[in-house]
Image 1: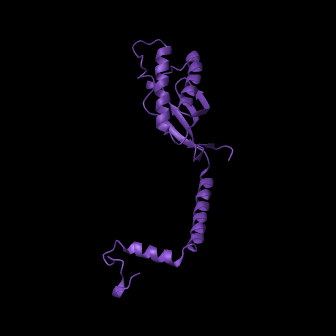
Image 2 (image 1 turned 45 degrees about the vertical axis):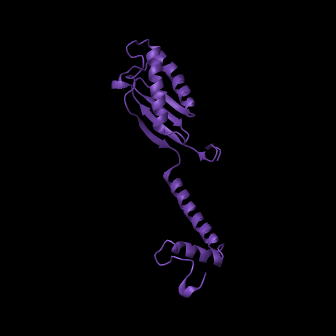
Image 3 (image 1 turned 135 degrees about the vertical axis):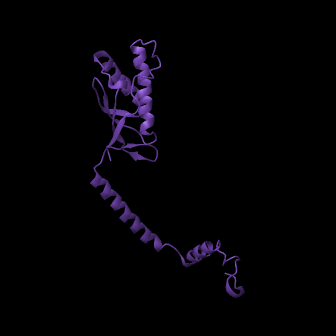
Amino acid sequence: MERYESLNHTKWECKYHVVWIPKGRKKVLYAQLRKELRGVLRELSKQKESEVIEGTMKADHVHMVISIPPKYSVSQVVGYVKGKSAIWVARATGSKRNFVGQNFWARGYCVSTVGLDEETIRAYVRSQEEADKKLDQLRMFEQTPSSVAHGFKSALSGSRFYSSPRLCRGKVT
């Protein structure tokens, strides 16, 4: 379990491949801007407790493999990174008209999960189902006859046929 991260009550490995483009797919991610933007994207990801594992910036799009903790949604992190980096780009290029960076990145992005293969996940799910069945069988013998009777009475208590603590012919149970 070395490759898993952990939170208080969670072990996790949530990695995503994310791709997005500048508005109009303009080839604006050139030389110096690209070098500086790489560090900005990594730093913005850290602010959302995420880590850029791999990243490539082409002239007209960005590729990232990013690890995002389960307490954040992918859209939260990507939206934050795109929004704040657009503001950074506007300030770095000295754009007076587009200072808030609203129009640098295109709306939306492409995302896919990265992780275990399907067969590994299916095997895990099957093993969990079998483990649950075994646990249920073990618990079946833990109930005492009085706890079974109490469970039966409480199940009937909401029914129209059982309205008092007395059952048939006045006997108290």
